[in-house]
Image (cartoon, rainbow, N blue to C red; front, side, top):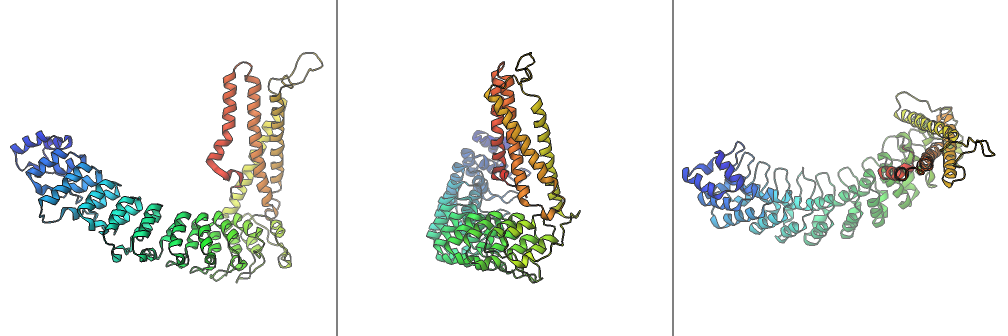
Amino acid sequence: MEPRLHKAAVQGSKASLKALVAEDPEILYSKTPQGNTALHIAAGFGHVDFAEAALGEHNDLLVVKNDQGDTPLHLAARSGKMAIAEVLINFITVAGPWPEEPLLMTNKAGNTPLHEAVKHRHSAVALKLLDAEPSRGHTPNVEMETPMHIAAREGLTDVVGKILEHPWVPEKSVPADNVSGTALHQAVLGGHTRVVELLLKKTAPGLIDMTDSIGNTALHFAAQKNNARMASMLLDAEPNLAHRRNDRQQSPLHVAAFYGSASAATELLRHSPDAAEMLDRDGRNAVHVAVAAGKVDALRCLLRRVRPAEVLNRGDGTPSGDTPLHLAAKMARIKSALMLLKDPRVDPCLLNRDGHSARSLVEERSFCFSLSYLQQYTIYPQLKSIPDTHACSRRSGSGNDEYFELSVGTYTLVATLIATVTFAATFTMPGGYNQNPSPLAGVAIHADQPAFKIFVVSNTVAMCSSIVVVFCFIWAWRDPVKFKLDQLTWGHRLTVVACLAMIVSLMTSVYLTVLPSQRWPAYLVIAIGACTPAVVILILGKEVFYVPL
C-alpha cells in the first residue's frame, strides 16, 4: 500500500484521499501485507468521512476481505465503532444488490459481523446489525457458536432479547458436539440471571431439557458453578431436572459434590431430597463423590441435608464396594473421615467386599490420625476387637507421611523459636532494671506502668503456649497411629496464640521504650502490629484457624 494512502486512512484525511485518487483511480485497491484495504483501516479507526469518500469511489471495497477473511464491516463491529458501522450497514442496504450479502459474509473463523460485535460486547453495533438482518442470531461459526450463544454467555440481555424477537426455531438451538450446550447453558455458565429469565420466558419449553454434547443440562452447569440462585430458577421451571443424568450417569447433585458446590447442593436437596440416593456409573452417590474429590464443604452440606443412614453407609459399585468412610480412609481424606465419624449414622465397622473395615484401611494406608479418636465415636465390639497390629510406618514413598513429618517438624521448630525468644525477653525487660541502691534495686524501671504489665502477661502466654506445643509433638513419632489429631489441632491453635501474644509483647515493648522520646514511631509500630493478624486473616481467611491438612 502507498504510504501516503496508509497515513491518510489512519488519520481519516478525506482531502488526502481525494488527492491520491485523482493521481491514481485504482489506488484504493492496494493492500497492506495483512491484506487490509484503506477502507479496512478507516473502519477499524472509525473514520466516517474517509469511509464514505472511499465507498463513493469504489463501493465494491465493502466486500473485499483481508488475509483473515474480514471485511471492513467485521473490523467496524470488532472495534465497536458505532458511527462507521451504521454508515456501512446503511450503504449495504441502499447500494445492493451484492454478489455476496455483506451482512452474511464470514471470515476464516466463520464469524459474521454480528459474531464479532457480540464477542467483543458491543451491544449497540450488534443491535444495529440485527435490525438490518434479524435472522442472523442463530448462524453458527466454525466452532458452532451462534451469536445467541455468545450474547448469552457475555450477558448481553438486550441483544438476546432482540434475537428472541425473531421466531424461535428449536432445531437452531440444538448444540453441536463441540459446543457447551445451548444459549441457556451459556447464560448459566456466565452467571447471567437476567438472560436466563429471558430465555426461560420467551423460548420454547423444550430448551430447558436440552443437553450439551455429554448430556449435561443447564442445571448441571449451575451445580458446577455453585450458583444456588440459578439452580433454584431452573428447578422452579422444571423440577425433574434434579433427576436428569448426563452420559456419565451423574446427576446435578453429583456434579455439585465433585466441584464442592455447597450452596448449589443445598438448593438441589431442598427441591429434591431424594436426589441424594441417585448413583453414577460407578455406583456412587453424592456422598461418595464429595469424599473422593476431597470437597469438605460439600460433604458437610450433604451430612446436614441427607436423612437416610443407608445413603451414608452404602457401598459403591466398584469391585471393593467401598462406603464413603472406606473411600476417606483409602484416599487419606482426613477431614472427610473425621466428619463422617462424628455423624452417629455412619457405621465405621462395616466391611467392604474385600473384607476391610475403615480401621484396617487406615492402618494399611499409613493414615496417621488416632485410632483412639476412631474409638471415641465407636461403640461396636467388632471394631474394638480388631487387634492393633498394624503400626503406621513412615514409608519414604508416602506423600501423607512426608507431609505429616513436615507439619510436625515445622510446628516444633516455630514453637521452639518462640519459646527461646520469649524466655530471653524475660531477662531483658524493656527499659532495663533499677540500678540505684534502694529497696527497688533490681526491679524493672517500668514495672508500675500498665503497658509493662501487658508485656509481662503476653510474653508469658507466648512462652507457655509454645512450650505446650513442643511437648505435644515430642511424642508424635513414638506411635503415629495413636498420635491424636486433637493434639495436632491444639498444637496449631496454641501456635497461633503464641504468635499473637508475641506481637502484643513487641508492641508494648516498643511503646514503653520509644514513646517517651518519639511518639510517631511508637504509634506506627502499634498500627503495624495490630494490622498483622488482620492481613493474615485477609489472605488465608478462616483456614488460619484450621490445621492445613
